[in-house]
Image (cartoon, rainbow, N blue to C red):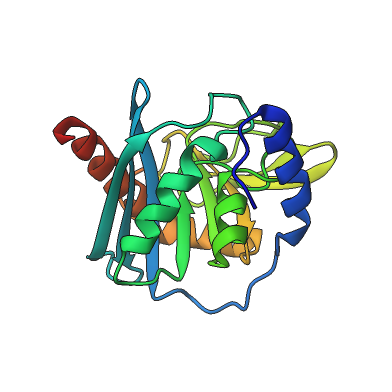
Length: 216
């Protein structure tokens, strides 16, 4: 499949691929979890992946790819800017992740096919989206305690969970990417965020892509 160059082509791809999303999982915890993030400086980008041991959260592998954006910024089509670089970074890893933790959305997307779902379907690797802000939907405020959740609703459908990862800290927005149920995605997010608001996978990938862009 050729890579889209227009918004209309990209939307068609999302419609074509979204039915391949698997919203279930086998219940087994991953051995390795990877954080994925992309940093930008005008049209320059750095796509980074950091793989952590799921139990200890120790780093076991990393890869970063420098490049330039090949798709315009269009809300709802952000994956088409980020997926090519992230796929290249995945190819450079010597450790295959069992879980992709994306700094973005999965089903919590107007067409139910955000970055986490896109990467999951293309790679076949279980994936979840853990976003800093909501892109779509409405929700009640979750309780103040760590682990409190609220349903993220769009068109009368639950598309994600609003999760308080630390007591009285702003929540994150968790959604299914591919081959992970929402309940499991929430459990994974809390496990990967023992001390801070964001998962350690996301924090590590964010540091790597920003440093690579500066050094670039």
